[in-house]
Amino acid sequence: MTDATAHNGGAAAAAEKAAPGEAAELRRRLARATRRQKIRALLLVAPLFIFILVTFAWPIGVMLYRSVYSPYFGQTFHRSAKALAKWDGRGVPGEEQFAALAADLKQARKERTVGRAATQINYELPGVRSLFTSTARKIRRIKSGPYKEALLKINKRWNDHTLWTAIKRLTSPFTLAFYLASFDLRYDGDGHIVRQPEDRRIYVRIFARTLWISVLVTGLCLLLGFPVAYLLSILPLRTSNLLMILVLLPFWTSLLVRISAWIAILQAKGVFNDLAVAAGLISDDHRMQLIYNQTGTVIAMVHILLPFMILPLYSVMKTIPKSYMQAARSLGATQFTAFRRVYVPQTLPGIGAGSILVFILAIGYYITPALVGGRTGMMISNFIAFHMQKSLNWGMAAALGSILLASILFLYWLYNKIAGTENIKFG
Image 1 (tube, rainbow, N blue to C red):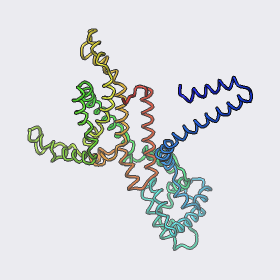
Image 2: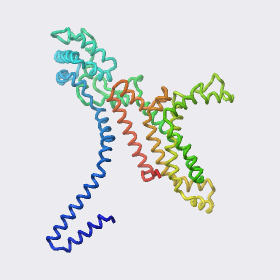
Image 3: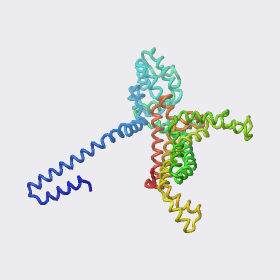
Image 4: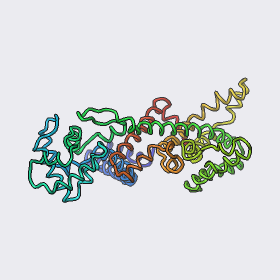
């Protein structure tokens, strides 16, 4: 019991024995002391709460909001939004809707906002951006209607039912189009959800590749890290400390330096291929392509993430008494049976901790696949960065990031159901 709790308990006992007036005063003092303790505790955790809110919860909330909120088209074509609300969605709209579109194009051309709005609809209908920008340049010469005839004269594509359906849908500030595109889906001309054309189905395959590479890297790190951690745990302290320095050495080297070293080692004219040719294992004309593909991504990521597997395993193995194995041997178990049935089950907390740590780091990796992945080694993080930096499709980047976050949370929930988070131990 803490001093504060003992003090409060003593005050409560004293309040029961005191006179009614004194008891009421003691209760007020006790309430004030309890309130001060709560305020003090709240002030102590407030900086951490604010830090988590600003650096974690708020960015995730903004990302989720941006994945469904895209107001630029509706703000630019607000007259068209009101006119298309009266359209029944059949065929091509009438003169009223064409007139509203012409007015919006004229104003957008004047305010120089047509390009940004047209870019949004171009995400759903590739090639439409040029239609909007070219029409906005030519529509200023048309002073009066009929606008439907004038727009069709500028470009016959304005007679496309699918185009008008997309315009009506995008006038709403909220959309699911980014999430549909993330699953290789889209809206058709009638507003139904259909699959993307074969040549545009990329994201489901990239998500599957990201998951496969992350699982493979986690498995290889466990396969390589387990014997290393076991060796560190059974060696004398002086020797294990020296080997631990070698395990931690990659942390003291720049990530770019390590990746550059792998490029020099694995490329066609690199160290590994030169040694293989010199040893006669392969001919000079059949050098192995180990870089700028999925193989290079996996090798580099395993090397970088291996310490994150070794450290949790070592911290758990170090606490396992050696007497357990000796007792199993004395009861007739072989060395392998004792290791498999007595030692390995006690390392499961370290295996779980290391696997989750490596997997979460691997599934969000960006720099390594970007430098050594090539076309077949790219992961979903590279596409998120592309949409943020190159295509400027922040809604698509937010949708992909949200799906990646949801996937990690689901896998963590699944692990908790199967193994339980109580079996995770970092030492």
